[in-house]
Length: 180
Image (cartoon, rainbow, N blue to C red; front, side, top):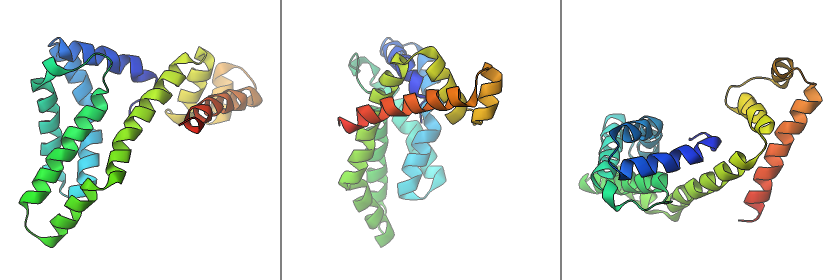
């Protein structure tokens, strides 16, 4: 999953990819490849083929870069592409297990997973708007895996201050998710 503060980065990458900047595409590719492989593999249960589908979906994004819209959700686009490619792969297989997997991919819950990418984008915007100290503390806690005590020592503040900062970020996220 993308880092919450990376929404600006994703928008920058979208613009760069649309403009044909291969380095922007490479950064996006490296950020999302493993997420796509995991997403596809959870449905087709074939890691090697999931890797192929993920790569093909990302390459299709590059091939269709000129049609990307400013402000569009590039992550949702590439995940939808990967999902559709997985459906096509499963349909080509003939065994019953494959047909069941295909039905799972067509389920509305998969659309919900893709819509969750939009929620992630909204949460990323919310996160970016928070004061820097709150963001730094939250990232240290959730992404670096530091304990509240470790963060407090590093930041030279009390543990209660760290707990408050983390709670403030979570409250902001709850306000967003409660409105949806």
